[in-house]
Amino acid sequence: MSLEPSKDKKDYNHQLLDKVIHARIRFAALAYLMSVPEASFVDIRDSIRATDGNLSIHLRKLEAARYVECMKSFESRKPLTNYRVTSEGREAFARYLRNVEKFCEDMPDLQVQTA
Image 1 (cartoon, one colour):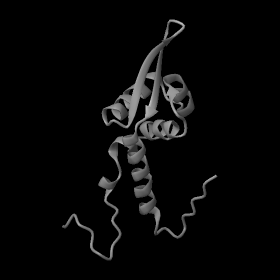
Image 2: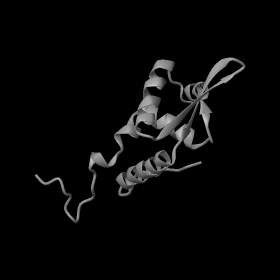
Image 3: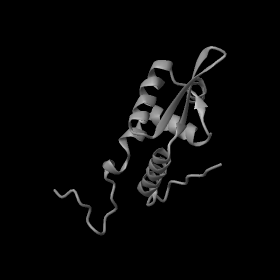
Image 4: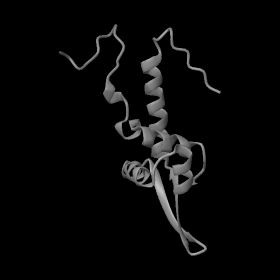
């Protein structure tokens, strides 16, 4: 069996979907961060409704992929951790969305409406 799709068949290769982004919490965190210049750990956690431990692990994976960067500082002697999307992260997220869109192109019964 060939890994290459035939010329008349659509390519539904699962490897087109970025496995770093594809996890629910990482997707939600990255989507949220794409909508703001930067956000605190607490803002991300509350916005995507994740637990501290779970979010921490997923943000580290996004950091390891260089999709987000972490900035640590202090505010009134309290530690503050902020995150923002890198240019690599923006490109990867856009590519991910394009690939998901391609998967859905030939679905006549699917009508995706935004806003």
